[in-house]
Length: 122
Image (cartoon, rainbow, N blue to C red; front, side, top):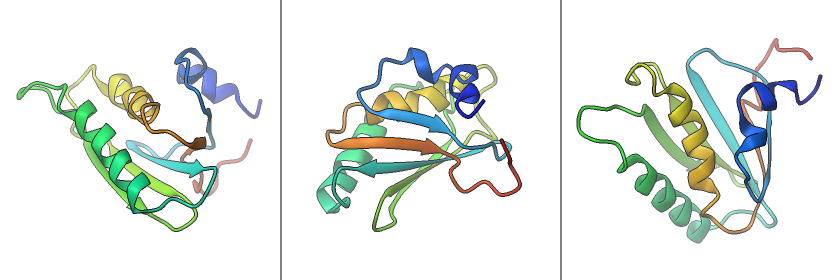
């Protein structure tokens, strides 16, 4: 059952070069813990921001994909997605789109979605 939610979210069908798993759920918020082979530096942070920016620019003016922020946590990058005001019907496009955008950043070893969700027990 550990990776059952990966399939439910469609992550197993994305054809990503890195491993991705869902650790839990936090309502309309998704935090992607992005682990690289080495600790992420400013270059990886910038490449990640650029890849996500290109993804977000693919939406038109009338379609809101959600709020996205990227931070360097030292041992990983953290990508935050809030789909609270996402245009209805685009939630999965945004959730999966973040992972597809990250697929354009080299050196990612693993992404864990909502890694730090408390009170969620498999």
